[in-house]
Image 1 (cartoon, rainbow, N blue to C red):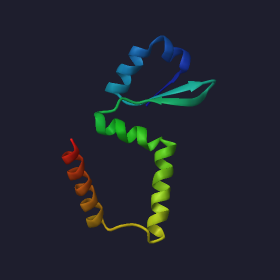
Image 2 (image 1 turned 90 degrees about the vertical axis):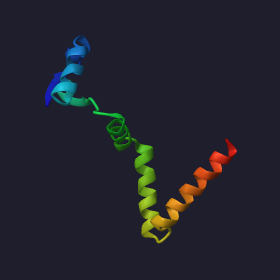
Image 3 (image 1 turned 180 degrees about the vertical axis):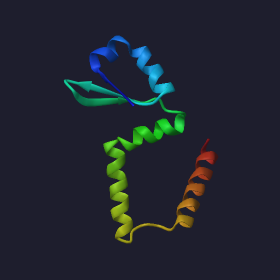
Length: 95
């Protein structure tokens, strides 16, 4: 992991992008404090995971879901996938 001040990253962004892709994350600092991390995702799935892991809206939705399940308001996996399948069939018929 490399640590670099924001001014240096701004001046040499391409070099830091190359570093993130080949070696690993770059921690970007401002006045000596970490303010960002430059990460090169390996593929679209990893990019989605990175974005969702930092999304306040997605994290809030997960927490609401966990509370709902804990309160006994969840549905069984089999029922969930049946509903997903049904939804997909209905969408295909409309297209």
